[in-house]
Image 1 (cartoon, rainbow, N blue to C red):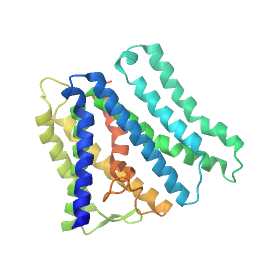
Image 2 (image 1 turned 180 degrees about the horizontal axis):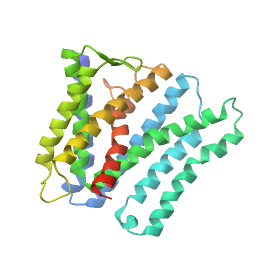
Image 3 (image 1 turned 90 degrees about the vertical axis):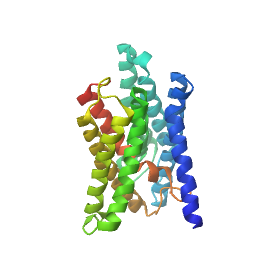
Length: 288
């Protein structure tokens, strides 16, 4: 009973923090405040997530160049965050200059590795870049979704929560066929399909609640696609994090959220869903 209470309180605080970060700009009638609160919070999440990756790799006996890991992850986040600011996005020269610094930053671990005496230098480079690719870039892209439409950002969170909840409940009641036992022995195809159906249904219903189809870009087809992306990419994100934890030999990625584990345990689905949502916004809807 105590564990359930701790998990419930921890989860409620997490949800409250996300809601405040998404909507504080609207409540304060200050768009800039909203941008920087959300961006600052997700920068903090980036640092925490990066720390979890480094600590779990250390459990496996893999010791990255910490200075390079944190520097590259933070710089990549900040560069993309600044690039997304509307004032700079309208200036093509500034936008291009910022964007081209990302590859230069990513190349830094290759250079720094020259000073390290490792038996597998390129493996170490890969581990050093893992937090940037897996954590920093997706969390920074979330700023663009939030800036484009904070209701849409909130909806992505809701859809991921719905997918996780109903995949668990459906799998518990009807699960018979294992999905990918090597990575997650408890996941079943029945649960995954149940989560997908509820996720898409929720996308259609909440899309009607949050948005007016006649006054913006979105239509029911968009909600179906976004629901599918959140479910499929979210499920794969969960499996990726399970694969990482099994590789490192840990049960939870961290303990920052009592009863839930670490930040990666809570954001695993979001980390894979955000890049695909962003890609859909850019290429399908044309919302830059």
